[in-house]
Image (cartoon, rainbow, N blue to C red; front, side):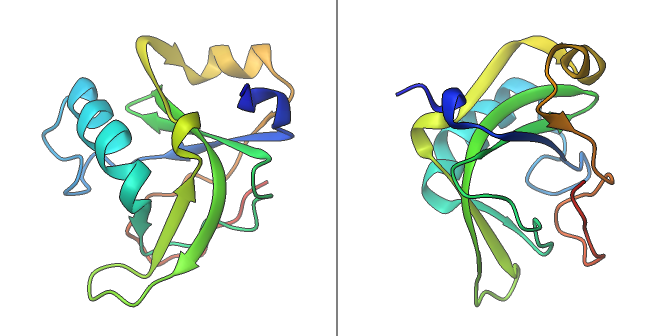
Length: 132
């Protein structure tokens, strides 16, 4: 199935290089261990809400160190009862893609009108987040 045909909106999600999950990891390690191995099963755990994204209609472009390293179609976000995290965001597992070539955010904005800006936010923080 071509999930991109279903997308009405694309948003950037800024990942924090200081977050323990990503700290001291190379982009290929994050892509392999987090996006392809852990995220399809566990979702993306955080302490920050993701906003009201339309399910199955939003492409999330994961931005790390000024480049897009992965993307996935958002399904839902749940509040979880966990000692470390408050939220789990889930994505269509088959839609998760990692990119071997550098994709610079400024170049993506030139290509698609579906990509919107949002206030930069980092996972595992407690400040309010708003998508635009």
